[in-house]
Length: 236
Image 1 (cartoon, rainbow, N blue to C red):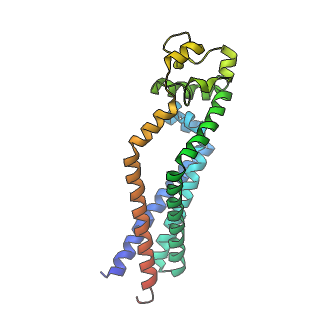
Image 2: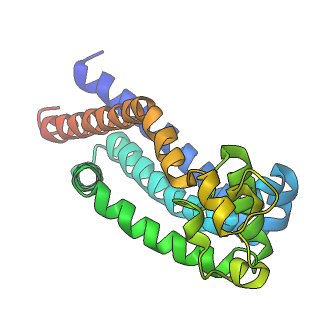
Image 3: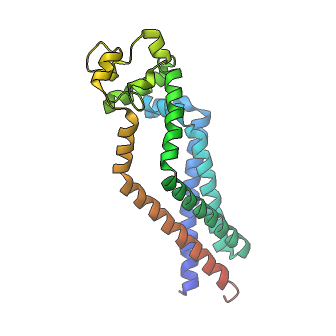
């Protein structure tokens, strides 16, 4: 088997797997969007909490559609030996790769800015919804109980909040005693959840970076193979 034929077969198999995986995600996304109640019953109450922050159905549909389209282009381009499909596949992978690199650079350079924006946004939502929205309250209670934290940064996140204005005290997670007014909360000095979450993320940064690097390597390999097939079609 020639090098061209070997790479063609590998290209077909690789992109067929991507297309099948994308189709599976697309199907799951449609199921979650159309029948979220069954999804919640199957995966438990935690799934309902996740659905409050991220519309998992639409996210899976988007990712699945992109993967299916990419797999289809790559598979058909290699099978039919179509220059048009191969160069389209190469271009889309290149665009995704550039976006990923740009996002990584922005994340590294503007991490502090992103944290500030996130802090301001989440704190405002916390003040408005904690104690007023049962689902948001349950999510925050579970988070604060599990991590042993209080609010996003500290107990002051609840100042002038719906919860504090109604009960005239902070959540019990913010104090070491049952009395959780301003003075006990200040003395308890319970750390906020955001620093702990950042610590967890940074502790797993190596694994996340390894996965990201692996994806980049696969993308570069896919582009290289697509371009090789594209350039050697006329010589075949």
